[in-house]
Length: 123
Image (cartoon, rainbow, N blue to C red):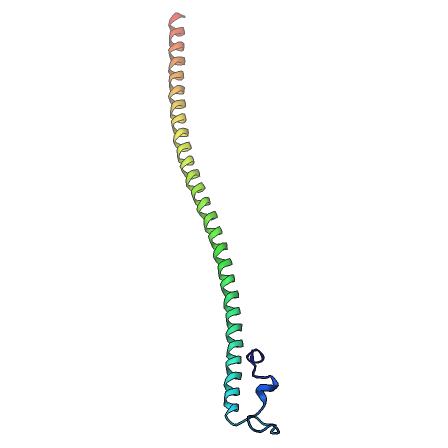
């Protein structure tokens, strides 16, 4: 980043008025320190942003998974409620059939008794 800004090229490192001095001017050092700090912060923010993006992606995946599980559970609940209603209906129909069968058996026993009585009277 500092190279892009032109801080580390040879022209930028030349000292005004002193072409032979190997050290940058005194006012230049705090500026360099500040630029290095900014560069470090930028790298830290960039890394943090990448970490946050990854965490967000993971959270979105978890959300999608939970949404799919919720939908499947709701469908299973609806099927269970329908099955429970079907069982209740089946139980009612079974009870009605048992009652009808008992009634039919009672009538048959009554008819058999009538036939036995009628045959006994004829003999």
